[in-house]
Length: 108
Image 1 (tube, rainbow, N blue to C red):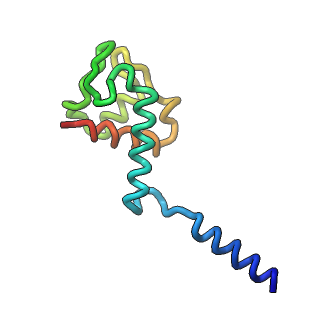
Image 2 (image 1 turned 180 degrees about the horizontal axis):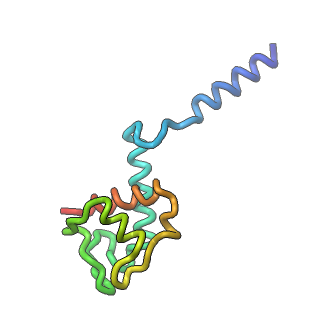
């Protein structure tokens, strides 16, 4: 009886501990945006600023950017001008997508 209770308790714990895959809920999407914002703040803030308008070292104003998500990924992957590639930071495709979403959120 104790063994059944332990197995049932463990099963319920696993069931409620599991998260749905990213993109299946609004809360998950919010987590991805927070992650993208955190990554942006860690790596891009000094040149682009928190609002994307700072322009240090020739950084472009991200609030008026017309780049598509694919073009943003290309710039992050290959760098552009004084901006180095962000491959080490964004090796995880989910992180890359999160940063792209955050950059797009800076647009007017």
